[in-house]
Image (cartoon, rainbow, N blue to C red; front, side, top):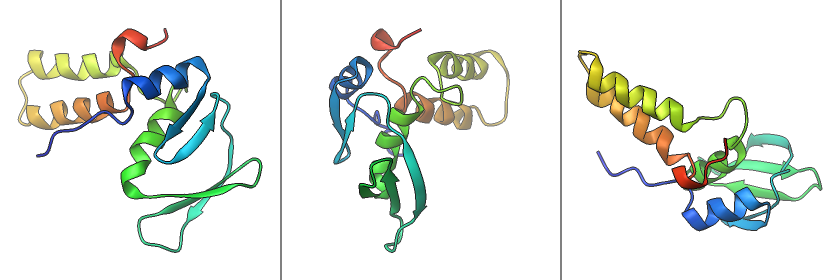
Length: 122
């Protein structure tokens, strides 16, 4: 399995957390109040077409989705937390199971969607 890389760089997370403009996968986000009013399949395979509240549209390819998802899930009730990653990793270490690498891989994928620990807000 290939290495799972963070969805956003530390610099992108810093800009996002501070409410500054940040370019994520070719899309410009202004502050944390990004509201999408429409998400629908795009005409190209694997591309999602989104329209924001101003009517501006963009296509998001498969390789861009993790970055956009990470930013939009940040701080949301349905988003992931470092506590989730820690709980899964602890589970692998403390419980005998048939597929520990599967649980570790899930923890790694969640961790890739989170900001670096030192910049995460409580």
